[in-house]
Length: 292
Image 1: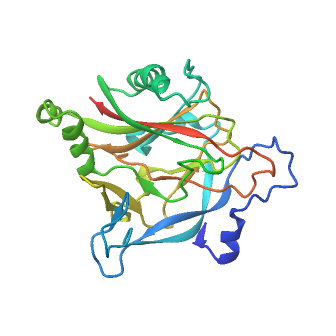
Image 2 (image 1 turned 180 degrees about the horizontal axis):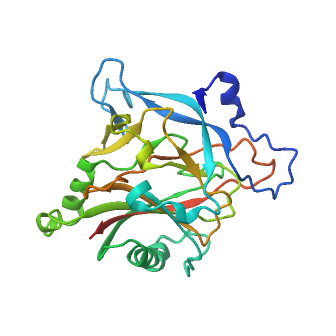
């Protein structure tokens, strides 16, 4: 069930579960508003400037459109989904020795990065090498530098995935690009169980290629590419209710092999059932080049 969101539906992004105890964890299917990509009206190539645009240029040349969609819960169905078919996979009981507040950048790279690499090598069939190239921490506290993003997107495209290999591993790129390479994000909450702004993700096989649109991501010294997602009522959206700190989502953004599940659109969403007083969601996602 899907419909274009009205102003009334958009206003439901405020927390409306005040009749629930603050410890209540929303679960099961939910109707929620997601923001989707709308292409430039003049047919030009979509772009977004990461920093200040040049004089006379807009920050971006495309728009968003909100739609209400059904988001289904994968809790107790975790084993139904795989990277090769759906482009996402759920892992449980993953320990971590990282500094628990995730405020120490050196600890993240020296302790948490090796844990992420092990998770990938242990759980992604065929993977023999992992190169972690960055991470993003999102916090819901006022003034946080990065907050949860409520916009359907894919972090990479086939073009930008190949460019990532060349950019990060230039001396080996020619040989590495002859084999299978993937970009996989490893996502987890930092203050679970998640009650507010959970992560939604669409099964890859339910998303048509024409609804995944490359967007130039313009930095001062280089241009990358992400993908915006056009709304289509055939898309099947999911979330994992009450994610805890020892659970991980593998989100595949690109895959050079011809498999069904090549990329997973994803976005945070506001759950209208979130109880008043519930903590906002904090999370970290680590992005990896995976070879094999």
